Structures are given as structure tokens and as C-alpha cells.
Length: 629
Picture 1: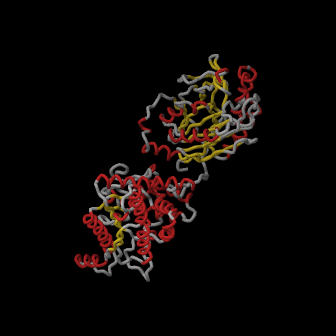
Picture 2: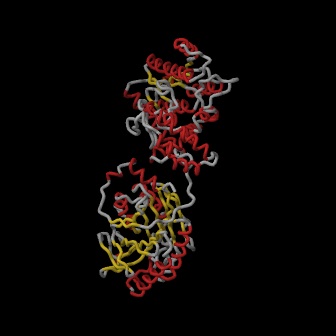
């Protein structure tokens, strides 16, 4: 389903040193996993015996019963296509290894030994086991099957799944084996663990899993031994964690007395494509590996995952202050550097009472505050035209007065009428010419004022408008420093809300946020806005969603449609499809505007600057993208 696969972390009820009872619990969880369309499920370390068997690992009876229990699991799982990763102890060449056995459809696909053995404080694995980190290109006989054995194994469906396995301490070492697995293409890493519970350890463990998923640019699925382990000297809580590219998307409640199965749907298609465009993943050095082919795994019938409808906006409210301060600082210091380098003392900005010019003004004012520059050197110009309403003009004026900047007014109606006359355009013809003459008149006033004052024109256009080409070429498309150029409309609203902490401007901010988005270029009716941008180009929340998935990892339009249907309840599929087509059409046809856009600070991971982030021919054909819908 568009590259999504369901994975699981299972914590079984454990009876220490009784493999047959443990096998029954494993089979129960494996059947449940298969019923829930799980492709791969991982169990805790030394699943069949219990991790805390200690010196009993050196006893023949335990090994015989463990192997009998494993054989029973294979018999019971012949018709189960879910892959299970189970912890066992293996004797090979008179050496005892702590291993993971990978099984599917009643067959053993391979065995991976543990590389790093803890041997301090409460852990003394070297007392029983030895490291398998040097084992490569080997096979062993297990239950009369010759199977691949070593740390050089990856498992692939020859499509989108490519997974590797490491065991507990392997993750905690300086260079985890998963680093090398990921550099060889593994997008899923599974860890069988027996990590005991100590004060604060659960949070650190989750952070370790999460950050490793980010470093590997993949998903990391972790399962740790549960409360059934021996409590002679330590207690185990049974921690399941599933993280994807730096975010934990599922974890269980620890200290559960019953079996636990934690599932999550992982977007492998996204992860695979992210590696082509993000970081220096492709420069990572590959090591020789053996790839084991797996049979088809269960396909999910229904996506069970939250898809964020606002991917540019933090989903955790507590992050708001930190995120907004980061954005404001990036904008402010970008502007400070530009003005300082050019020895310019004044900033010129067109202020309309809309979202974009409000954020640009607030961030410019912040820059002046940081440098203790006189805010009177911010020259804010309102430029009323044929569509300007009293509401927006008053909001712009009051905001400027409260911030203590220099406010000027330049009515563009006379200039526009003169322009209409000079080119022979009927003022009653409210076509694109009528609108663009006004937009260019405003830009001309700003540029000429900058020349007169020795100032810098601050651009107000945002990332959403740049993506859609919703600007007048050589009009509001142009400035001397485009302050909002990598901030999408949904995020601009979010940052402006943060400024409400300044009580003296809170009421004005509220009204600006409530005002319909409009260029105010068509004549108003009874002082009410008649030209609402989102009724023309579509909802910005949809376009920002489309932009994120299209740029971040090159998602196909059909997948973007699928994700949007899942993310948004308030739009039906045909409405989403309509605006997605509009997005594709505008994104392709308006590239020529992006090819010559002005400088501006990069704020998030997505930018459309032609100098670094986005290079695209202005005459690229869009047909195959439209056909994908």
C-alpha cells in the first residue's frame, strides 16, 4: 500500500528455562501478528530460554529443549508469512553464541550472532557466550537445515523491504553494526534486547533507538525482555519501541504481565527516497554482505498510522516556543548579516495587514531590537489600491504604530490609472492586467523608496506562494531580501500566533489571523473583501501538504492523494484531487519565477531557492505527473 509495511515489537510472557511454554506464547503472538498483517515481528533477546538463564546456558538439557521448541514453532508457522525474529542460544564449533534466528513459513532464513557482549556490573555475558562479530560468509546446520550464519546478513523481498538484525548491546556500542547495515541499504533494523529497568534508563533507551533510526535514515524496531525474567538481581520491564527517521511512532506500556504486541506502519518508500536527497547517506562506505531473499509478507489492508495534515507545523504544542524562536532568530540574523554587510541602515517593507507582511515586519523589528537599531529606520508603507478594505488598512496602521516604526502611505490608484491609460487598458476590465499593474506599482514604490532612503526592500512572499507561483512576475515576486521565502503559509500563521505573547499587539494579531487571505486587487464590495485567494488556488493547508510530500521525498501524486485522504477529514477525495491537479499545474508552469527569485534565509528543510535546494527546468512537462492521478 504505497510503500507502507506493518512491523511489530512483541514481548512474550516468559518462563525462565522453559522453552516449550515460551514457544506457545511466541506462536500466539506470531499468529496475532499474521492476522494483523504484520510483515516482520521481533521478540526479546534469548526468547526461548529467557535471558536470565545464566550458567544454565551451559547445560545440555536446556539446549535440547530449546531446539525442540524451535522445531515446534517452525511446524506451527508453516502457513504464516509474517517473518519472526527470535532469540536463541547456538552452539557452533564448540562455541556458544547469543543469536537471532529469522524464520518465515516454517523455514529458517538465517541466523545472526551478537557482536558486542556486555561484561560489567549486572551483565556477565562473556561468562557463557562469545562474540560473533567476525563471523561472515559462513553457514551452519540448525535442526538439519543448512542456513546462513553471520553478521553479514540482510534480508530482502527484492522490492522495498531490506532489513538487518542486531542484538541488545550492539546498539549501545560506539559503532553499532546497524550503521553498516544501513550503509548497505537496510531500511529496517530489528533489535532483540534484554535491557533491565533503572531510574531514567527507559527515557535514555528510547532516545538511543530514536536517534539511531535518524542516523540510519531508516526505521528501528526494538523489543526488550519482560517481567517474566528472573528478578534475582535486576528487573526487566518489557520495552517495545518503534522509531522512524528520528521520531518514535509507537511504544508500549512497560511492566505488562501479559503478552504485548506493538505495531506501526512504516513508510519504506519514503525512507528509500529520502536517502537520495537527504544528508550524505550515499557517501557511506558499503561492506560485503549476503542478501537473503524472503517470501512475500502480509500486505496491510488499511493504514493505521497518523498522517500529519500540517507537516510543517510542530505537532507537539510544547515545542511551539522553541520552534518559533528558532524561526525568528534565523530570519532576524539573516537580515542583520545582509544589512550589516551592505552598510544599510534602513529596511523598506510593504505592509498590507495580511499574514505575510505582518510576519516580515515583526521579524524585521526583531532584528532591529537585537542590534539596538532605531525602529524608526524601518519604513513600513501601506499602499491602498482598488481592493483595499478599511479592516486590513487599519490593522496594518495600528501594528506599525504599536511597534514604533515609520509609517508612510502611498496610494497606488492614480499610478495604476495612469498605467492603464498608457497601455490602453480599460479600468473596468478586471483581468490579470488590472491586478498585475497594481502589484508592480507597489513594488516600484518600494524599490524607489529604497533608493531614496538608502534602504533594503524586504520581501514578504512565502514558500507556499513561491511553490504556486502566486505572485506577479517582477512585482511582489521581487525584493532585495525575501525574508519569508522558506516559510509556508501554515507555518506563518503558527509563528504569528507566537507573537501574541506581546500583549500590546495581541488583539491586532488576532484580527489579522481572522482576516481572509487576499491580494486585495479587485474592487471591494461595501468595504468587504471579494477576492479570497484560497477560493482561487485552493486551501493553503492542502497545498502545503502537497508541497511537503512532493519535495521531501519525491512522492508520486497518487501517493500524495492517498496520504491526504488519510490526513484530512474535511475534504472528500474529489476535492483533494482537484486541488492536487491545480498544485501540479501551477508548480510546473511557474518555475520560471523561482529561477530568478531573490536571496532569502532557509528556515526549514524545504526551500525552493534555485541556488541550492531546487533546480528544475522552467519548461519541464507535467503530463506524467497528471497521468499518475
